[in-house]
Image 1 (cartoon, rainbow, N blue to C red):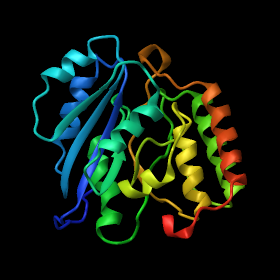
Image 2: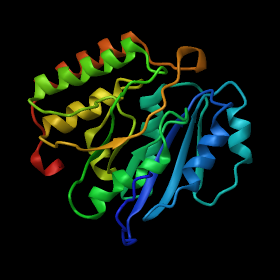
Image 3: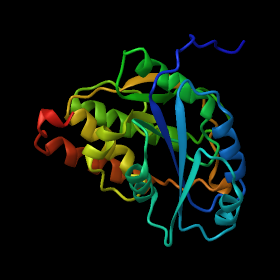
Length: 246
């Protein structure tokens, strides 16, 4: 039986859904359709950044027609972190969440991330992938994710379950204040490290997840895990920012 979410009263909050895209011509149409079909408890916008795609992604985005959709194009591929930085700079909502275009994450889970914010229980919410038994998961991918997450917990004396999750929901102003500089997948570790350094502990909710393999276009590698641990160590040794930046 599908989980029933508590009814939420629509409030004057706008959510910016940020979608970085690179060479996703096989999935982008479905990704847009799924994201825009969700019944959200607030106003939304979908900000898509085409990060220098060389396939037919740009043409498909050019044909998309929805008043809630905005498309921004990078002439050259600059990495996921750079695409998110562009999307955040153009976001018009009070809150933001990242949604990759690879169909691994289900946008139907986004209202679950919003619920703790709308009822005042949280400011930052992470979608926690449980990584239950499933033949689509790579053992080393899951272990790498757990290793990076454990490193964050040890370094910052925290207990989060999924550092590398794409679903990170927070105020746009907070994300901008983090000044995330990582251009690639290291942005996930940098965001979490900077939040934990400010003593901001994400509230976590369980989400669904469908892993895709390397043959389907999975781009993250073990090098990204090594970089993530290095970034976490760097953030741990930095001086805490002014508390007013929270």
